[in-house]
Amino acid sequence: MEKLPPFDLMDLRLLLALAEHRHFAQAARACNLSQPALSGRIRKLESALGSPLVFRGRRFEGFTPEGERALGWARLILSDCSGFVQDLGGDGEGPRGTLRIGVVPSATPFAGRLCGALASRYRRLRPQALSMSYSAIEKGLQEFTLDVGFTYLRPGMEKMPGVLPLFEEQYCLVADPALLKGKSNSASLSWRDASDLPLCLLTPDMQNRRIIDETFAATGKTPGPRFETNSFNAILSLLREGAYAAVLPKEQAGVGHTEGLLVLDLVEPEVRSMIGLVVPSREPMLPVTAALWDLAKSVYGKFDNPG
Image 1: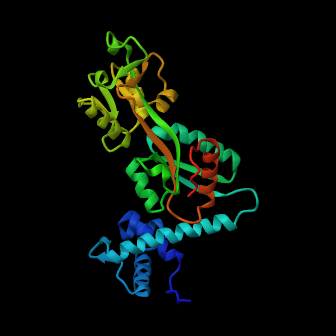
Image 2: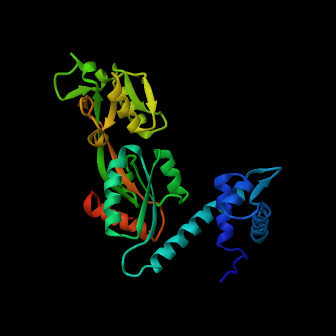
Image 3: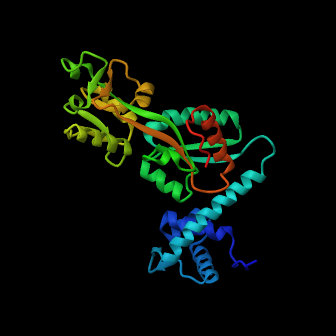
């Protein structure tokens, strides 16, 4: 067996703290160390590995190419160690520990219900769900800072290992009734007609907004939103206060306070986006992640695709 360099898990944690804070003193405080102690351990790690890991000047200037590769390994090793402790530290009462979950905003009601059921089934498992953008979830899964994501699935992803399709997101228009006088006498409205309304939409960095923009563009319209935010709660609050309209996922409209507002299906075209459960590419799966996967698959999963 190849001899291992003389470093330990704490050295890898220090490396990740430096990546998070991008500042020697702040990383040291986060790890309850002095700055000289942190810097000394990083230098010893570099010596043990035979490669420089960070660029140094008067302050932290980033990671070398070798340092970036070391970060990837450090994240994977520490994640595997977490799984090791979870798997062998159990006592027959199910998995224990924190399950770090990234959730696109439109899936938060669904994720909340599923995580509630999971927490009720496993009393010592603590779901920690954070509302995040699609790109942030993708990055978190790649870097093992997230254990699972509730996120949009690109075409073809539903057949990939570690991906469990859950439900199709559909869209509706929620608006002050005064805005729709003479525009709609039914339970639906075309996307083209919706584009003429004073719209409140999510910010352009959100995948939900990109889907909406692409759909409007397909109808030949490019509406200019009157209000942008990364919060559905903020949109719903504004709708209740003024003469505005919003394109919302039906899941969000169903849990929002829409009393006194019109809720119409958006048609021509009818748009559906798949939301699924995505876990990092690793084997074996963390016990806390496997618990959520199995629950979601038994209740909602459409495909036999455990990864």
